[in-house]
Length: 131
Image 1 (tube, one colour):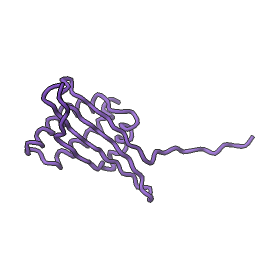
Image 2 (cartoon, rainbow, N blue to C red; image 1 turned 120 degrees about the horizontal axis):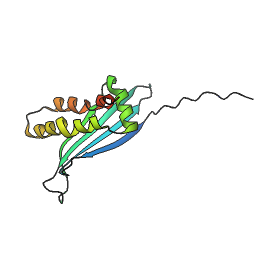
Image 3 (cartoon, rainbow, N blue to C red; image 1 turned 45 degrees about the vertical axis):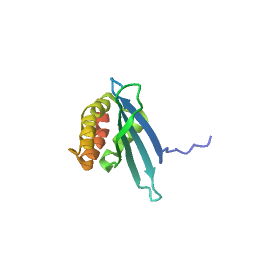
Image 4 (cartoon, helix red, strand yellow; image 1 turned 90 degrees about the vertical axis):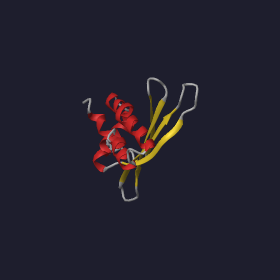
């Protein structure tokens, strides 16, 4: 009987949109992850982050902060795991807590875009907090 060749599967491109709405339904976070592999096999991950608010649950959400964050190579495994498995409780807590507060401060001008980007990217390694 002929032997079958081993097949190695690798995702080279993926886009995943994950969302978190606060319990009061007045704030929403879109946390999009996008993976791309270049012709030279260089992998890049990007977080497409959007923080939205509204005055009441009958209103439409309004964009407050929109950022595209390039993910550092050290966080690629966490980005891959989050894209495949979704956000875990530690990540949701981080987004609903420090990231929400910083988003409001960014819109007020007391947090920089660079600080905000680092905090948003800090969501990824929290994927492994529950292990």
